[in-house]
Amino acid sequence: MPFPSRKMQKYPLVRSQRFSDEGNSTNIVDSNLNVLRQRIEEVRMKERLNTCYRQEKIGWNYKAGYDDTYRRRVVLVQTFELVALVGSRIGLVFLTGSIFILLYSLVINIPVHT
Image: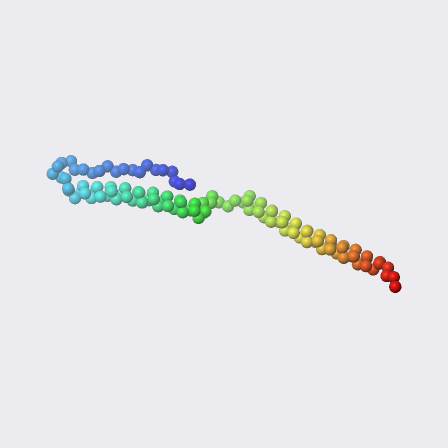
């Protein structure tokens, strides 16, 4: 989500009060500082936008904090899956054992005619 737009502060141009002061070094320094401030502000805004877009592409915009309820649900679901897996394996063992006992009893009780 991009940062809310901030109004860029425009610094007024510094001009001399008299015509003879035009080109005075203090006025040039002040105007250069104002231009520098504006450029720094523009670069900061571009960097903020770039980092915001970069984070969205990577997918690292997670909310801060630890979600304890989500973790509890995950642990609960994993526990149910483990219990179901163990229960199904035990049931499969009993089923195959019962089938083999049935087949064994059928084989023994078949009368053989000679």
